[in-house]
Image (cartoon, rainbow, N blue to C red):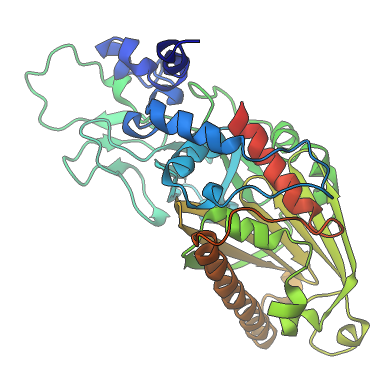
Length: 419
C-alpha cells in the first residue's frame, strides 16, 4: 500500500466535514458528532500513524505470567494521548456525573471530556437532555458550573436556547440571508441514566427521539456485571452527600493502574486502610468491560463502634475511567478526567445510607479517613508519572496473582486503540 493510500484510509471518519454543504454544516439534525471533532487534533495523519505504532508495542495475547506492560510512551507521548481521546473517550457510554446534579426541573451541570464541552440539563417537563456546550453563532461556551436556568443565554452575543436545545433568539441578525433558526439549535448528545449515574455517548449520530431505556444502557455500559452491581448496593437508594476533586500531575491511566493493582500497594502506602482490611481475602473477577475487586474487612475493626468499611468492600472499575466503591454504609465514585498526557482530574462523589446522613461525627471522621487515602494515592501516582518520564524505564511486568484487573484494563485499551 502506498503512503498516499495509507493516509487516505484515515480521512472518511475524521475529516468528512470537508464534503458537506454549508447548509448541512449548520444543521443539528444532519451534522453528526463524528464530523464535529477538532480537525486540528484528530485529522493529523502523523498523529494517527505514530500512535498506532505505539499501540503495537503491547501484545494482549501473551499470557499474564509472561506479559509485558504497555510501554512508558502510552503514558508520556502527547500524540498518543490525542489518539486515545478519539478512540477511547469519544465512543461508548461514559459516566459524567450523578443524578443529584439534575434532580429538579431547570437544573443543569457542565463538564469537559477531552476536547468536548458539554451541558446536561433537566427541562421544565422533567426530561433530561445533553448538548455540546457551544453557541452555534461564534462558538462561545454557553454555560459554566452548575445550577438552575430556564434557558441558556450566550454570554458573548446573547443568542438564547431552550433547555430542549432549540434556538429561541438570535440577536441583531437583521439582513442575514438563507438563515433557518431550526438549523441552529444546540448539537445534542445522547444521554442516559443508570442508577444514580448520568452517562453520555459521544459517538451516537443525530439525537434520540425517545428516552433511552436504562436497562438497555446498563447492558451496553456494564455488560453481564450490571445485575451483580445493582444487587450489591450500587443503586439510587443512598443519599448523596458531597463532592471532592483533585487535580493530579499524572496520566489518567496511572490513576487507573493504581486502583487496579489488586491491593498490591495498600500495605505499603495506606497503612491505616490496610489495618482495616483482610488483604489475603482479596478476590478479582473480570467481565466484558468491568472488573470487580472485593475484600473483607478486619474482624477487629468490625467490633469497634466506628466502622466505616463494614464487613465487605467492593471496588468496581468500569472501563475506561469510572470506579464505584461500596463499603459499609458508604458508596463513593471516582471519575478520572484526562486533562493532558501528564495531568488528570479525579472527581469523588460520596453517597451514604439514609439512616446515617445526619450523623455528622461519623461523616466527618469517614471523610477525613478517605481524604488521607486520596492524598497518599496522589503522591504515588505523581511519583509513577515522574518515573515513566525517566529514560531509565521502558516497560514492566505484572504480578500474576493480583494484577489481573490491570492487565484486563490494558487489553481493553489495546482493543479500542488497535481497531
